[in-house]
Image (cartoon, rainbow, N blue to C red; front, side):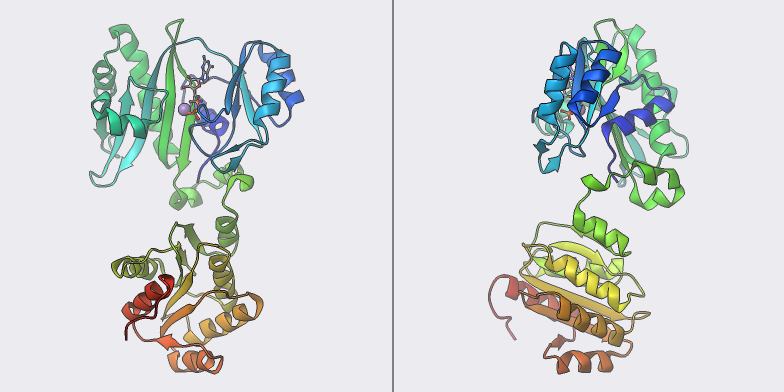
Length: 382
Ligand code: GDP
Ligand code: MN
């Protein structure tokens, strides 16, 4: 789950990280009042769940309250890579001597938490990693032992910091690490971590991605959710208890169970197609859920064929068939539908679908091959 910069900054602040505190505003007038109160100059920053706001014109400096209102007027309502700006953060403008990068991510392959730092901060870290990977330094921390002080200091020295700056830098690295683990984040990042002209450290851009699988441990995080910023399809899916992730292919998948969903996507890829989504209707999917799932998948204009792959264990095939038939009554199906339905009560389920003129195949391989063929606009080879 993504959260906004100002929310991430609040989290970092709780862990002792010096952040640039500002005010969240939804109108130009609020921005004017905020600038008045904070003292000018100020920086006006778009609050959206995407990075690269600076390049897109979503970050502006203002020398007086009137300019702050003007900048807010320009930024509010703006679209930054598909995300509409509904709020801006107004914060005191800072005199920057140098911009650093500091980030914490999970390294699954190493089973460690990686802390990354770079003296080439301010710009996209992916770009630094691509163009000048030698400019990124790393420490790998054991999740149980945490980031040791010596590791944090080693990062500071590797950045070429003056000795006097290493200790306060190391403190921020350890605070960021503590924040990352405490909130169950999958990413915690400060970019830029600014060295101000006054010689102090200040986090100027805070980013946190919360691990969805740990949200149950943090009911307080629900308040951080911004429904306006989420993919409407993913929101509808969550409300229905369906796991759904939009992808960029053409084969819409409706599957029960996360493992079978992954296997279905693999099969689609194996036969040369590309899935439009990951969708798991859940173990005991109701007919209502199946109907919702079908509607979700069909509302994606990229979908050229729907592949339904159900293994009836807890889920009964006749219940799934009922859901499908119900959904087909309410949803306009503009693409071919390939169905593989096996397991508990498969005869009943298949009979119901056959009576409605739908064909069902026996194996996942056959289903995937047919779906790929249909997506490519040709008949499947027998
Ligand atoms: P991003 O583009 O979405 O990563 O947004 P950032 O918050 O990182 O801002 C982008 C850039 O704007 C930073 O790298 C800075 O160069 C600049 N910037 C942000 N805040 C300030 C500020 O208070 N003062 C100055 N001078 N520049 C700032
Ligand atoms: Mn940034």
